[in-house]
Amino acid sequence: MTASAAKDIIARAVEVLKENDHGDYTVPTKGLYPFQWNWDSCLTALGLAHYDEARAWTEIETLFAHQWPDGMVPHIVFHVWNDGYFPGPEVWRTGRPTATSGITQPAVAGFAVRRLFDRARDRKLAAARARALLPRIDAWHRCFYENRDPKGEGLVAIVHPWESGRDNSIDWDEAFERVPTEGVEPYTRRDTLHADPAHRPTQAQYDRYLWLVQHFRGLGWDNARLHDASPFQIVDPGFNAILIRACADLADLAEALGETRIADANRARAVRGLAAMERLWSEAHGQYLCLDRITGKLVDSASVGGILAAFAAIPQARAAAIAATVERLAGKARHVVPSHDPGDPRFDAKRYWRGPVWLVVNYMVADGLLAAGHVEVARRITQSSLDLITESGFAEYYDPLTGEPLGGGRFTWTAAMVIEFLREM
Ligand code: GLC
Image 1 (cartoon, rainbow, N blue to C red):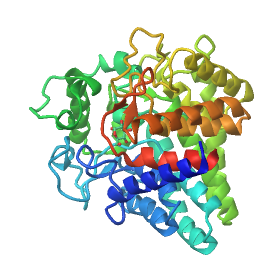
Image 2 (image 1 turned 30 degrees about the vertical axis):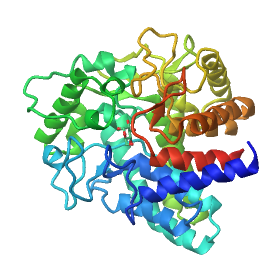
Image 3 (image 1 turned 180 degrees about the vertical axis):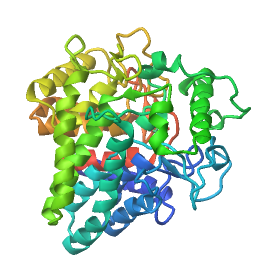
Image 4 (image 1 turned 90 degrees about the vertical axis):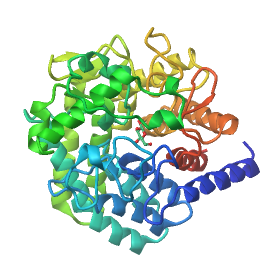
């Protein structure tokens, strides 16, 4: 790509970010997602920093201003009233001063804050704002290991598919059979008003998503109780790898700022987590798999969650096998990295997390593989991502076979990732 083409794309990406900016937080996209989402915001901050560092720190601070007293950081903050999204505050009923959801999302904040800090041109500002966020992010990490790893295995479980960020992945299908649908209150979905129903989760899945929400609401959203009371407890390798990477990054950052207690605690979490990840490795698939904590078995589903694990400092041999797996996938799909292996009969090129490519995932996989020395594969992922943008714009997700844009348009984190990809070219 020529320098002027790159400049033009960055200018268009900045337009998308500005359009979705509400002053101290961004929304993922207008219409479909009118509130602040947890991991969207943290990754979006990297794009904001490109033109306004102070605004980038604010994005993450706004999210953490709504952290729960027990350390949990909710997956949605409902800053303003809007009836365009379901389930809204009247369904979650978490009783927070500003309404939030009651579940969480992948813990990218530790990674994002360290990256903002490392690149900051305004060093004084960065040190002050990072220092204030450190104990909050540390509390979130502690909350995960306390509540989602009750037996101290070193790995945390999600209790709702939405926590993974990969809402309707094939990974959850089997475990979801255990989630009942009786007693789900009548509701009207809103996502299908904004996007093609054939590209979204099915109705049967939605009923189960809501059953879990009602079930947790019945437990008063007490994080100490949700895990054991949930019929859905999945150890997702991608989710854990993000948390492990965030712990390691937070440890480095805390060290740089002289906060040794936070540094030591997070280093220890990362070391234990990395060792425990071995339990999730599948030699047959050349990637990690989810573990169903209720059956004690690995889930036979080669999704991008097990590839995303490369975001953490996994052993060399594991990273090499994952790089080979991505190359294999590139032979089956025009654009990498598909959220599911196209060779699997359950693959669906257009349905949300059951096949499509998502640029945030590409960014984290490429980052991890690059750090592990797999430069060519990382470049290939970056190139695929830029091809998708050039051909199909800033979509929510893309068909890996045709490159067609899917879901919502003018997407904030997609735009932020494009800025990131271009600075790394
Ligand atoms: C969808 C995605 C989730 C994302 C949210 C907002 O629910 O699955 O990962 O955070 O949209 O963009």
